[in-house]
Every structure is written in structure tokens, then in C-alpha cells.
Image (cartoon, rainbow, N blue to C red; front, side, top):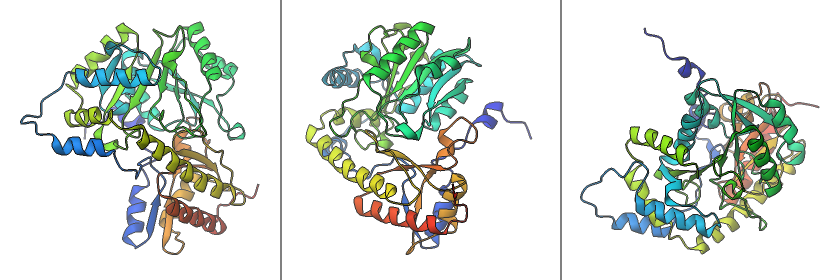
Length: 400
């Protein structure tokens, strides 16, 4: 048999999806599984989107321009303006989800062997995107003690070498829900300018902010016109994960021209998805107000419930809909599999993502899990009850 590529061997399995076979087996046994492992909201897609798709009567479903439909890009320009982010249409390239946006950004800026510094824990697929580009992820570890705030800039600076090409952040964060302040972002700005690096910013959770918090975009950091790259997506904002529409955004004209060549190679982003996303731009503010109100209830139900369990601690997120919880266990991979394979409480169990997959530092996250509070309040209460019971029965409890 011919050998596979080294990239195939290096590509990590998703900690979010790798336990799916065990969850499916549990369901076949009749166990109800609460899926807190993946950020798939159960919030309804806006009515304006569903009505627009029902009314769509195109006779031919054509390719769009490789950079996306002009009408949609103009609509996005208006959306960003409403968020006090002033852009030209030329700064916006529509992609097949936020994932492709970051892949294109990496492919356009990184050579094989280059390094990208990322605060960990981070969205697990960043590892895979780096593998695609032949780059290496260099972690700087954030800690649960301060809610996973940005690590000291001195820790970033220690990791910079002649191979370092950029720093990647997610704001507000997946998997922690932490919101970087303007001051923290300005510190990163100064560092990337000092070393002539790119600053990649995944800002897909912009709409999910709590207690009146307001996110500050890297696109509004002065002096980063040639350094800042913003990644965006409609997936979570409008509960449209299956539309697969995102955007890569930068004021660096040379970079955008390079990324377009990758876009031309894949022809165009999905036409149906762009139609749906254009309609989504008409979503009323009342939709987002209701969604945020609901997520606050869900966050408080889950996080307060977790913190009430002996030996568990979980910082309260300021944004997004994820949290990292520290449990009194010795191995989160084993524990999460055991929950699906061996445990049930009143015919129910919980699927979580082991936090080991959100760290690049070997051995990190062994006593942590990521949970997504994307289920209704009653389901979250039941999930917390399952987890509390499981921790009284799991043999790998850490007594420290």
C-alpha cells in the first residue's frame, strides 16, 4: 500500500467529535445523551432567513465570485459599520465558514516551518489548520486561576524566534469564554509591531456578550493596517452552522490578493449559504437580545451548578457559550469516554470534550473539560446532576 503524507499523520483528531462513536453506542443502549461537547446551538435560525430561503426561486444555482457575492460583501460592510468597524468592500473576502478563512490566512502568510503563538487552551481545530499550512503552534498557557486572562506579554516574548510569524487569539474565546480587554489587545498590538508579526483574531462570537460587555475588535487597533487579520462567521451568530459562510478580513491589500488566489482555486463559497447570509443581515436586534438573555440563563445554570459540585471549579464566561471546568479527576479523556461507555444516571449521561485537545502543551488539561451551554435550562440542570453523580462513582478521582 502506498504511504500516506506526513500531514495526514500529523493531523489531530477532533476532541469535540472523537467520542461520537461512544455517544452513538450509548444511545443505542437507550441512554439519553446530553451533548455539551459541541457548539451547535438549538436556538432557531432567524425567521427572516428561513422565509428568504423558502422564497428563493433561482432557476440556476450559479458560482459566485471567488471573493463572494458583491451584494453580500457590501451588506457585510454595513454590518461591520454598525459595530464601529469601518471597512472597504475590498477588505472582505467571503469564505466557506470561518475555518476556511483561517486556513486561507495561514496559507497566505505562513511558510512550512513557521511558528504561530496561541494562548492555550484554544479552539482545537487551530492545530489542524496549522498542520495544513505546515506551520507549528507554539503555546502560551493561560490559567484557570484568573479566568484564563491573557498571559503576561513577557511570556509571549519569550516564545518569539526567527520562525515566529504571528499570534492568534479568539475573542471572546472558545473554549474559555474569556473576553480580552482593549488594554490586553493593545499590548498584543505593540508586540506584533515590535517584531513585525501578523495578529490573527477569531471574532466569531462577537454577538454573545454578557453583563453589558462590549468586545473591542483588532480592526480598530491603530497601526495594524498591515498586520491584523480578522476571522468571522455566520455559524453561531445566526444559528446557521450548516450554511458554511465566513469571512477573512484585512486592510492589507497584498495579503487579500494572495488569499484570493486560494479562493479562486476552490472556485467560490456556497451560493445557498450566501443567499441565507444576506437575508440574515436583516435580522432584528430583538433576536439577538432574546438570544443573549437565553444564554445568560444557560450560562448561570451550568456554571453555577458546576461550581456547587465539590471539587469542581469553573470561571464564569464573559462571552461566547463555552466554559472550561476543572474536575477532581486524573484523566479527562478517560473520564469523558467512561461517561458515555460505562455510566448513566436515571438513563442519562453527558458528552463533554476532554480539554487535553485544547492544549498544545503535552499533559495539560488532564483534569479539565470543555462544555458548551447550548441546551435548554432543564437539560443543563439534568446534565449537572449527571456529572455530580458521576464524580461520586468514577474510579479515577484525584484526591488532591
